[in-house]
Length: 323
Image (tube, helix red, strand yellow):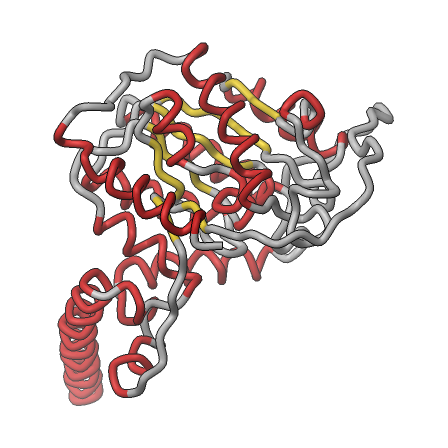
């Protein structure tokens, strides 16, 4: 009897300690969250999009794009806004895992009601191909960072107490990059009849993302931005197979890079891995027209609620003419 009472006391003490610890983490997390929203320069690059999304005016995103670095170098919402009046936003992160894509989208829905969600396919084929334990660890880590922003913004202390800052030229999620490091213009999308399967963890989370979109009244579209270094026809076949299984459309711009007008001698800053500002402009023009032709998306130009897009367009023009 004494042993059982002692055990209950111990369990009670542990529970109390964990409750106090959780409370402290929540309080510190709220402080960090507010600091990051108020000052973009203290946020590390990998987390910027999380807080940038939270900083946007409510219900001003008709189209959102999630994915890794390919997204925020290839798609420029300013070009799409100026040519089509579509209010889009890039929610990409460096090396964004598919788990992060899902959590990012959940956070988007807290303040936004996108009509269309574009899911970049590049992260369907990366991250722990064989490591089930590693995938579980990655998933748990992303959920914990979402529950406790202190864990996501742990490096903010460097900026709060030193002069360290992280500046970016970011426009509605698009990251400006000029400069050119060319690669040859030989065709890289050659169909050899083989398929690279989407990773199991990506397949599972794509289903979750599709369900999340359905619950919130959004249409899901798979997209692949032009990337000569990252993409090939085997990956296209794998993504197309999953798109068919889930009943979603798939736009692979690697198949039409020549029609888009991509010149790998001038439109990439890192040997064909990512697009520079000229490559992004071409891709965004093509994407904007595709969205206008295939989806019922409103033209928001002239709508006061979307004035932030005009302000970003002005800032983008100043950045571009500053070169």
